[in-house]
Image 1 (tube, rainbow, N blue to C red):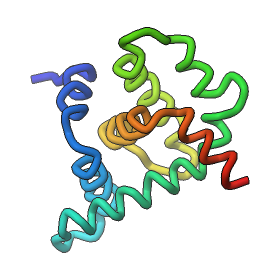
Image 2 (cartoon, rainbow, N blue to C red):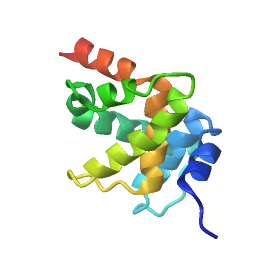
Image 3 (cartoon, rainbow, N blue to C red):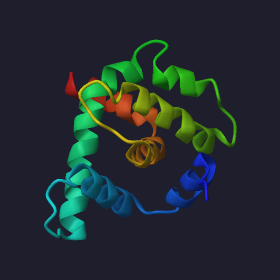
Length: 128
């Protein structure tokens, strides 16, 4: 049975942030096969997202970057419509030293869109 991207996003979008962080943590730390608590996995997932954002924040926030592309969508459905765009953007940049599969890219995209790209770029201003 083929799972459509929209269906997968719809299902995953119902997960809590903590659950998504734990899924990311479990995915990126799969090499360490020993059982981990959900809290430990979520902590690893948060760290991975922070690392990802640190690496790609400039590309997200620059003129004509991801944030500007997403702003063109607008409207009531903007957040839902953003998730596939952000997912594709993440996958396209995954070759930059970070191996990110489609499902992990969806987890990241959901978390990024929930917090908002403006918040991501505001964080960039605070850290410079």
